[in-house]
Amino acid sequence: MSELVDLERIEFSGARDGDVVDPDYIRNTRLQVVSQVAIRFMPANRVVYCDAGTMIVRARDRVIVETDKGTLTGTVVTPAHRALREARLNRRLVRFASDDDERNVQRHQFKQAESFQFCLQRIRARNLPMKLVSVKYLHAGNKAIFYFSAEGRID
Image (cartoon, rainbow, N blue to C red; front, side, top):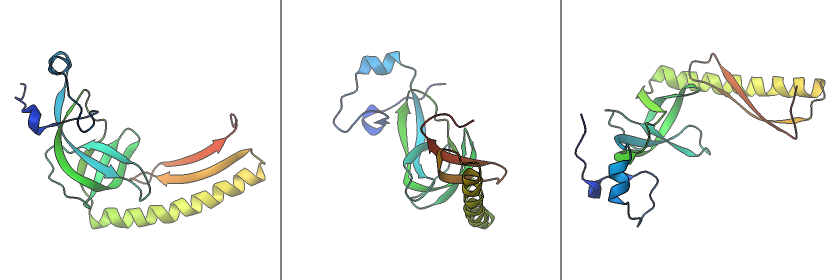
């Protein structure tokens, strides 16, 4: 079932302010109307767009987001608004963050600092030509991602 869309009231994702969206492009492209929201996962991180579904969120709300890497805790930057998109957003809001989730975030920050120091020790002990950038634990705490930079492959 398709939804009738008033193009004057919906943002076209990818278009800049003042851009004119070609009506033929809209008719010939499989566009979907989604309720999208901007989320930031870390204070200095870039903003990513997520599918809000039926959730009504406000700026500064803490939410749990399902991503391709797992679930993450983030902060809403902009409230949900309807937008036309060519493809489904691969991130979606799952629920509002609870007090337990916030405690998990604190535990993960501590574990991230410990893991960062441990990894630095291993890099130095093995004399590896790499620079450790950061460590990030996913929401469940069962997976850590180590970000690093290096000139070439590290085997």
